[in-house]
Length: 353
Image (cartoon, rainbow, N blue to C red; front, side):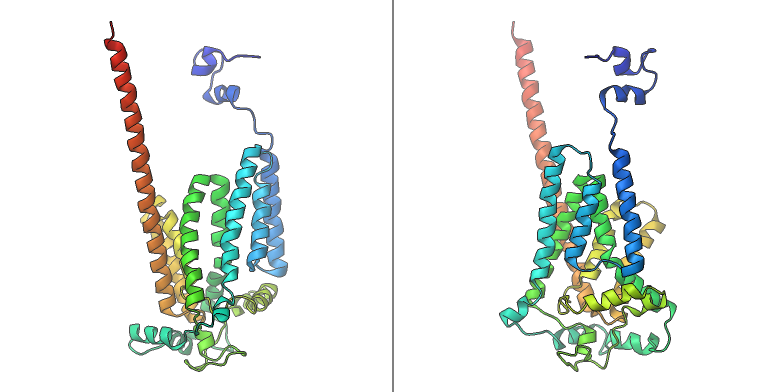
């Protein structure tokens, strides 16, 4: 078996002239890198074609399947221990979303009352008797005309089904340590939110305004649920139809807190410390703000739903930041103690005659 020469190790001399060639002596070429890249590229092309024909994948099971396919493609050629770790991570990821799916109808089985006037009254308390959704729609919404902000609201709303999933997959492929940090925060937010969905099933504004054919309510004046018409205006009818069909089987009373608002802020909060430019930070912060305005304008959530979601994200991030700092200090203390023990042993050895 060939051995590396000192010139190869240090990069000096004429054995190997560059550090890149020196590394190549010890690190074998990744022959699967091109295969993985081609697989991921093919997936992206297929997803774009699917989007053009059928729209964004919305239901959690289909999202789980699509994420699994992408991670498998990005894992081709990896060692077996990495595949075992991938399987474990996918089990945990699946458990998170299956827990969310189980909240659908749980409040009905438990016989818990639907929250209608309580959240409406909280919004009125914040806005001096006004209903923000009703106020916005009376001033900006027109059933006959689709304006630019209607399209923008539809697009921002739909990012909920793309951005968090893209972040989860991207972090897993690029840096699993950061993926674990993100998933801790996400899982905490989702766990608390799921408990709230069961204990406090809440009618969103469109439902409180009589928009549900099966449960006619009149806590608000009629509210238009115009979430999909921006996509119709863009010519993406297939996506709008898929969304309108899918919303019939989602948990319509999983409104307090808003997961749309929570996930948009969580993504920004996680990456915010890495961004130094004030302009980029302002751009990042505009995303959850735009999501909040869109949710209220489209009749999907009350303002208090959004504020509760933001508070939940803040609590989750603060909790895990504190736990991670404690873990780092504990490991640092253990390392200092271990190094101190080594120094004492060396001193004792050196003192012996």
